[in-house]
Image (cartoon, rainbow, N blue to C red; front, side, top):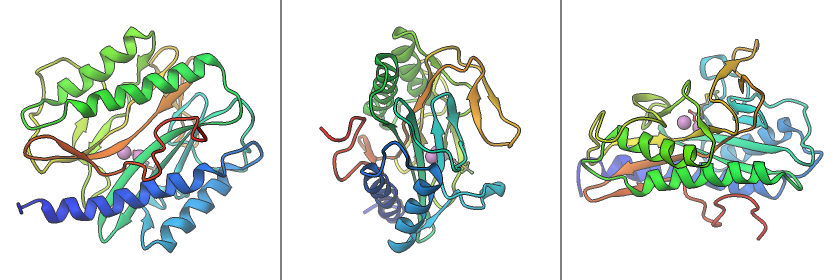
Length: 257
Ligand code: MF3
Ligand code: CO
Ligand code: CO
């Protein structure tokens, strides 16, 4: 036992619910499904399993999760837009259970997608996992950013600068900011008990972002594709734990193989 084990236990419950929600919705992802339907399915799943969807009414956000399609970087608002063949989609779910938060997102592909889109999704996933693998006490935030940035830039992709990961526990967003770019051996040093998200947003073109007039939807300025994966993690005495891993083993699309 240690002074953060209760926090970790609660965050594991919230994280597992968020991950289970993404597992649940996976089989529904097909052409013709509206992003509002995704919102409804996930809202009901989280409610029926003892949680609450954190984005709902968060700072005026009016849906229970974010659905970010194609050139949307993050914070896409569910709507009547139906999924179409060739779309790439991020679904970002945050569940609150017993006051603690679990925040996770995955990419989904709809039907056949381009090789370029597939490569972007794969690189984004691998960049998140390669950053997670180095986590532990003594590692610095700059090491995380450097790991992600160097990985994706080698592949010709770019790291979005305007949004970052964040501390999370019994608040949705708290310090520190977890940047997805940076220099080795710089920034805050990780310590056991810290809990935060890593959620790289990677563009196939330039990293520049802009927010649409709805005040939420962040898109690539050059209309290039963008991908994102997110896990909530905790730092332990000798490494890390991932709180939002898929029970079904869904890591990156395609999920049917
Ligand atoms: N889940 C997002 C994150 O990873 C935050 C969404 S806030 C919302 O931090 F209001 F846009 F839903
Ligand atoms: Co987050
Ligand atoms: Co999120």
